[in-house]
Length: 430
Ligand SMILES: *Cc1c(COP(=O)(O)O)cnc(C)c1O
Image (tube, rainbow, N blue to C red; front, side):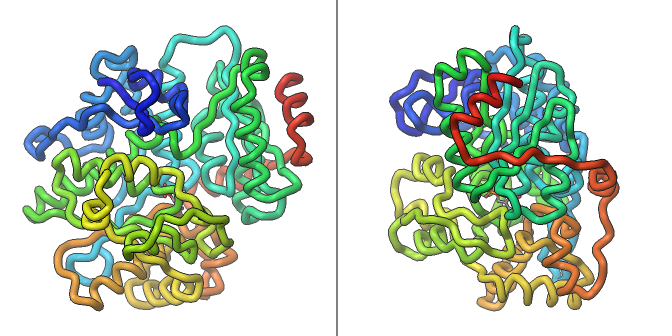
């Protein structure tokens, strides 16, 4: 299947070419040229995530150099099963996507992208993945490419502005992963990364690529867990399952939208945001008005200009239809904190601050009499955010084993100035 740009001014390419490129040459984002129709019967006998992912993704890789490698790629990238569990009241569920190496859902997208790039023919020179991160993305990408021959990862993160545990994670890989703690904010890191990636002279000397949330190689695999959860629910109850998705750049939620487009039994979709209100305003009937982000307790969602909105806009050219297809709500820090406390005392579950935005939105839906079965998407393990979560629940949050192993390793990040020339020199000398 061909992938086309949302801006319509770039040649159509295959899936692996789109994944290797990141952004389309016209500045647009790649989308599948057509969306196949799939029904629950197409997945008969399939229940584990790697099998469902392979069946789901097969049409997108038809005719692609990676077509025959897809089963092996899926076995590798989807080895960790999510958990779909009841959450308190009947009809309420929790989908835990945080059982991977860095304890956030981004492990699925980063792992799939890495497995795909590694399955393509080897290059003469190593490919350097440049990633600017405010926390979770950098660790997931580093874990996915760590110790893969032919790849290097350069992480840029704002010094002092990620949680101590996130900083430790970013610096603990070593080997082919270098972590730079940049004297600046996240925008400085992003500006540096963009400047390196758009420098054709530099890229001719040292091949560079990105792995940010606009990459098709992260978007497509995220469909797999929505397909799996909605199919499991359909088989057990013959009812569709709605999803409330903690949302920042809209990558995770967009995968859910695509799964519903394919014809799988997904009910309503609600975007849960933090105090960065751009999506909530738009879906309430206002303009789409990107702006600088503000810091919140759900820091991986501190996004003022959701970069996958362009894909949503392309999928639903009619704004009225788009506003009918999705809803969005904003949850401020006070409500995040209150929800972590209330869910803990009501159900015993400990949620991360991102997941708490979705739990809060589901509470609001139910209070307004919303019927049907709904699933809160749990995007990270609460142990990644002990400074926020532990005082609220009044107890230490036990570390999952993968995270504990990572935190037991020594960690070191190199200091860096937010200086483009110094960064170019560093890449050239690596
Ligand atoms: C990245 C992230 C999000 C936001 O996901 P998007 O795809 O950017 O909308 C939510 N929660 C956690 C824990 C994250 O790391």
